[in-house]
Structures are given as C-alpha cells and as structure tokens.
Length: 262
Image (cartoon, rainbow, N blue to C red; front, side, top):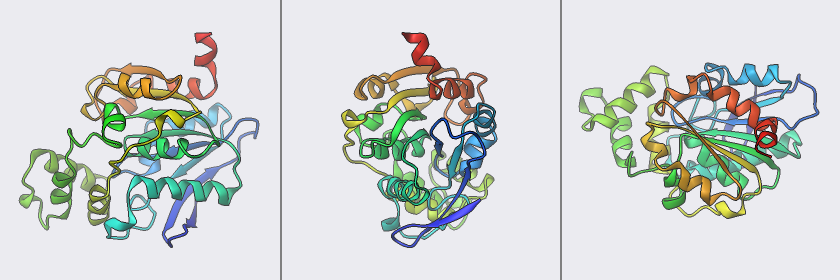
C-alpha cells in the first residue's frame, strides 16, 4: 500500500500489486461511491481472481474515500478530477498500457479517462447505464444529488428527509465513510457530455437487471464503439457477489470473451 500526492495536493491511497508476471497490462480498479477499492473489489474476490490469473492490479481509493485524503469542499471533487488523479498516478508509476474496471462512480471515472487516454486497452463498466449517455454521469433521475447531500450533511440521521437518503446514509455509515467528503462529491457529480465515441478500448458493460442506476444499459453499450453488454440477475449493491460477476471480468480482460465471439 502506498500514497501518491496529486497536482492539487490531495494524497491518494493505492495498492499496486505487481508481483504477477508483466506479460499483460496492469488492471486498474476504480470503485463506487462511499466504498473503497478493497471493499468494492476485494470482498467480492475480484482482486484475488485477477492475481490467480497472473494479472497485476492497481487498486485506487478515490479522493474522499477509503484511506485517501477527504477534503470537505465540492470544488475539490467530481469524477473528472478523479480521472485526472488516476492519469497522474499512471504517469507516476510509468504505466504505458492498462486495463480498467469501474463500478458505479468508478465507471464514470473510467469512461472519462478512456475517452482521453489511449493507454486504456480493455475496460469493464458496472453499475451504470443510459445516464452516462443522456446526462453525462450517474443517473441523477434515479438518485438526485440534493437528496444525497442533505442526507450526508445532516447532523443526525433522524434529520434525513428522503428514504433514498436514509438508505445511502446508512450504507455510508456501515462502511465508516467520511460523510462530509461524500456530500462534497455528491454535490460535484459529473453531469456533462462525455466523448464516448472517442473511446478506443474494448469495452464490456456488465450490469444488474434490477439496478435503477444502470437503467437501459444497451443505450450505453451502443454509444461506445464495439462495446459488449452482459446483464446479470441482481441489484446495484448485490450484483458484485453474483457468481458470474468476477469470472465475466477476468475472461473479458483476458480476451477470452472476444475470442469466443469470433
């Protein structure tokens, strides 16, 4: 585990496991809102599965999350800034090519990075759908940011007004997240057009059938050149533990799915 300081002075916690053979690009793991890289990908077994497949992994805690710095200022947040953090970290580590896995907020970071950085070879996007195309980020029609901000900035849980806010505050508290930092990120969610047609990475959209934040994933897959789509049973928080979730990612990053399609 290590820390890297970004160009605007925020320390980012990351774990670069480069113990596997260097024949394949490292896999960068970008987690979702409120959790850390390890919680999103370690608990469900993806990190171990990638190691078993002889893949190096770069697991990142986005600013405001996990063991990274947690400034309480919306101007320090947004997925575009987080994508820049990742780009600066790739530069710092001297990585010339990577594969990329994002989930929810991490998928927005991933598409922003891949739309501007040709180093991304293959990419898996989870927990997102048409909102990326139509709104330029997480689907705020399903989860309005003002509900999140109110819930996360409330002094006491009893003051949270909306059931969605109550649920997300409870989840954030259960993983011991920094509530003011999360509120700042919620207030800065990316909501601007993304050049999805500029993405050159081979892409898999991997989502749950009952995930409102990944509504109409076919719209997203159609907007990224050559993207594939796989839908699994489950919801936004639970699908990462579906028995097909981890194998689908490992196979796609290995090129096995593409070979089978040919």
